[in-house]
Image 1 (cartoon, rainbow, N blue to C red):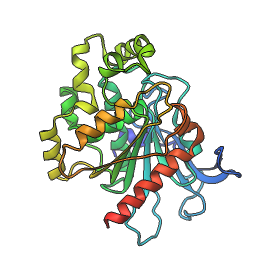
Image 2 (image 1 turned 180 degrees about the horizontal axis):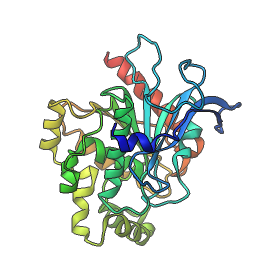
Image 3 (image 1 turned 30 degrees about the vertical axis):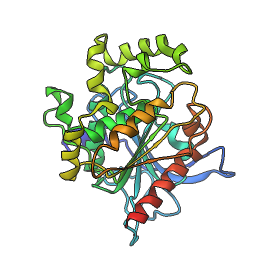
Length: 316
């Protein structure tokens, strides 16, 4: 961790708090370190929030500055952390790191990205956040990476591609630690198709998507395919898998009743991922109802995490 990063984290202290979820009858006690900045002079969105369960952690003192992720004594090889990137169409000012709390009775990290950024600035935010988490002790295979909506897009952009894929300004930015698995929930994966391939069910959203995507990715639509997770180069990704740089398990889940995202987004991502040797691709069935359901209800994210942990257990 750099001196600048340490200085920025001086106010990032553990606090005892309670989180609530519509599906849990009583609040759950957690330790939380909120809004830890991952760059110098951050805006209010450029931060991470870390939660860990009160019942499983005895080494935390409240009001103590966070210097490392807490450890839990266990012989299990399961991932210890969930790193979740929330959605918000790359610019919703009302969604922040607290959006994970309905799904957070155990522990996880929630990443925020800047709403004023334009591609590839969002990805740079995510990679810089991972640099902070690595400095706190996040290691290869120690976590699951999940994302909802635009957050799923960012999760795959960060985990499938070399940082240098996004431009020369990424030189020197390290890759994130390798996740044990990546989960995409109601995700946006093929950016051009959100304008030109919505299908009959979602065609009425074409103009809305075009406005959002121009704001996030620029007016040159010819550049949008290169930003799309569902348009990666199969040969390049296969090489990254062989080198041990990519998660070997991916779960994609898409609500059939999502009023904003068509099923074709997950279908296209699944189809291309299945062309990559060494990656197991599974389809989930936990996402139901409206687009925001996973983070509003919480249990869909939690059930998806449990499903992935079960798959990892079965693989030994």
